[in-house]
Image (cartoon, rainbow, N blue to C red):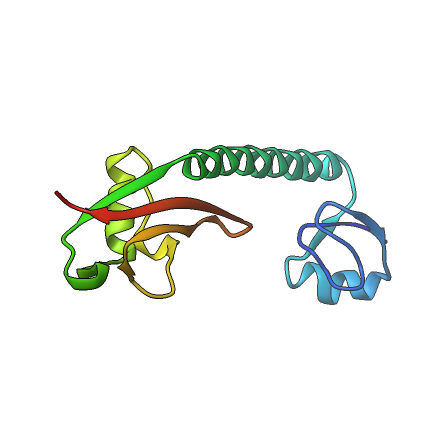
Length: 148
């Protein structure tokens, strides 16, 4: 029996693939779990067009995320802070403050996207990673200098 997979099925194929399977397997497992539809009439072209539109949408989103990551990577944040003895900061710079500084530059990120192991407590220049998407991480340069 010919079926069109509507989801990825291990050891069988990916969504959109047209496969020849046993009738019982198709009826009792694939159709029952919504993993496939019969490959008859216009079903094949309908599923193929749906998969093509989802792929185009994913490509567009990936392109937008890469553009966003490029904007982040080309940004340098200068943070002026009060400094005490030996270059130690009064307080620290956290992921929330970095997210707010990016937001003031027109780059909207959430504080949980800023991948900062521990707050910045010294003067200097730091590379801080920003998680743009599941597959994409950008780096912003943060310069911590004395205020005044």
